[in-house]
Image: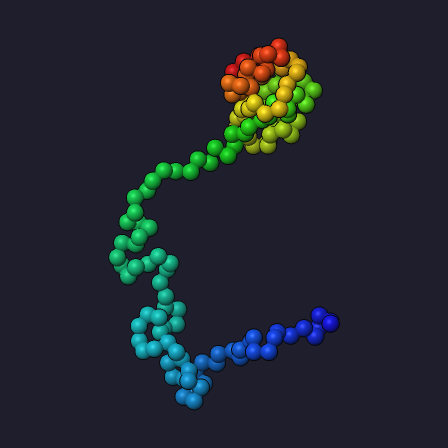
Length: 144
């Protein structure tokens, strides 16, 4: 089999509809558009959600809540990632330079995932209750 010999299966394709080619075609005169009205005319159609002048559904329903765009820029950091860093004093800039968090992150929070066995000092980085306890048990502290 060659790519230039591939064809659709028999009966899978239909010939293109040729409208406005006389009464015998079944699609002459009005070309399947019916008589009069907006949809029968060239370029005549309404926008999505338009309900003929009635207040559309998307405007009738009340607005509720919002989507926080800053929420995606608050990052979680595991204890095991903190353990792997070569520095003792850890802040947002250190985490960004080590590619632990993305460059556009606004804030970071250390979570209790993994283990830490060395002293670290967190500055300007949050920590959960469990993570804070683990850091302090290893001799470090969390200065927020």
